Every structure is written in structure tokens, then in C-alpha cells.
Image 1 (cartoon, helix red, strand yellow):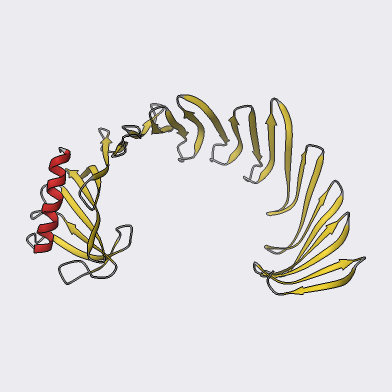
Image 2 (cartoon, rainbow, N blue to C red):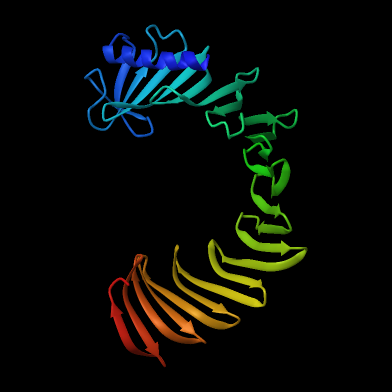
Length: 322
């Protein structure tokens, strides 16, 4: 449809809706996003708030549906849906003047499954098309490739039979900038993932139950950071982070399914302790050079009281949220 004819059709539809000419027009309360709510019985938009009219044509046969969104009784935007044999073929978003802001066209395979979207916008500075496709990688259809992008900017993701990613490439201006891979067992449980970008690589390992075991960061072929995770049954009880001459350690204690105590240290020197008296209340103690200097009492995310310490004794107190 030519752009000029589109700009003529929309005001015509607005006039028909206002005059009540088309018996197919239905009115609803609406959200700002154009989601229809309770029906309206007045045959027009409400004077206050968001309203939506839905017009499927006089006989529901031309495959076009027009939705007009109003704010305080004034037209705000509109969306026109085009269908053929029950399939969505295109969607247009228009502003209040009838100017087309964007148009999305849908493509289907022989089985009627949507495989691609072609998106154009009114912004000439953007690429002419944004495309998303979903295609089978092997003849059995157990692996699919999802591609999205425009011009030279693309992401390409291969998915297994469970819909989980196994490989991804990100291209900027036609150049691969990020490569990722996921290794999974026959049940789809993740064992390892690798992400490469420039001169940096990040490797993440999991155990047979899918629990995080280790994160390794490599830069210029040198290991710069290793973070290790230790578990007791389903509870994370220790995290060690080594890199750039530092060893950071978190140790956690649990009671049932909730954490009740955590200690943090750097190079063997304690930096903080946190004790949960109940799920919403905790006491946090901060250390300097291994000595306690501040104790903070929390209720949720609100500080109730701060105590300043010297040689284990409280020397000053500050009350309230600070």
C-alpha cells in the first residue's frame, strides 16, 4: 500500500469510528501500551485516561484490523494488522497524524511456521530492514539457527532440540566481536560455557547437577582471575576469588534453606561479618586491618542503627536510617 493512501485511510477510519458507521468497531478501556481492558458502552473514547477502538471492518473479510489508541479523548497512535488466510502478513504502527512509524512484514515456510520478520522504520538514518529468521541447521530439525539484525550488525544463535543456545556469534559492522559456546549433556544440563571478546576469554564450568563450579577470565592468553564455588548439598558455602595478587574468600553458614552467617576476608584478613537474626534482619560488622570498627543493624534494606567500635567497645552510636 502506498504511503499516501495509508495516510488517507487512517483519518477515514477515525471518522467512521466516531460516527459509528461500522458495526464492527468495539471500544475498550486501555493501558498505555494498547492492551484492551473492560468494554466501553458509550460508543467512543473516554474523556479521561486511555481508550482503544478495535475495527475489523464491516464484514470481517478484508483481513485488516485497525486499533486506535486515545488519551483523554484525543487520538494518540494507531496500529493496523494485515492478515491473509488467518496468518499475520504485516503490521503498521502510525502516529496521531497517520504517519507510518514502522512496518513489520512476516514470512512463513511451507508448513505455515513463521520464519522471518522484516522491519522498516520512518527513520531514514536507520538500516532499511531489520530481519529475524529461524531456520533448521540439520535435516532432522534438531538444531535451529536464529538470526537477527540489519546491515552489518547481526547476532547468530544455534539452538538445540530443547531451544537452548549452543553457539552464538555477534557481528558489528560485519566483524565478529563476540563468540560464545555452551556445552551440554544429552539431558540439556549445562556443563561449560565460553565467551570470547577481543583479547579476553571467560570460561564457566558447572557440575553434573548444573551447579556453578568455576569462572576463569583469561586476557592475552594469561589467567587473570579464577573464582571457585564450593557446595554442601544444595547450599553454596564458600567462594574463592584469586587474581592480581589477591585472594578474596566468602564463607556462608545455613540453617535449612536460608543463610544465617557470612564472613568475608582478603588475603587471610577478615573484612566483614554478617549475621541474620531472621530473614529480614541482620547485623553487619565491618573490619579494618582485622579489627571491628563499625557494626550496622539492618531491617530489610533500612539501617536502624550504627555502632562505632574501638578495641571491641562501642564509642559512638548513630540511630535511624543514614
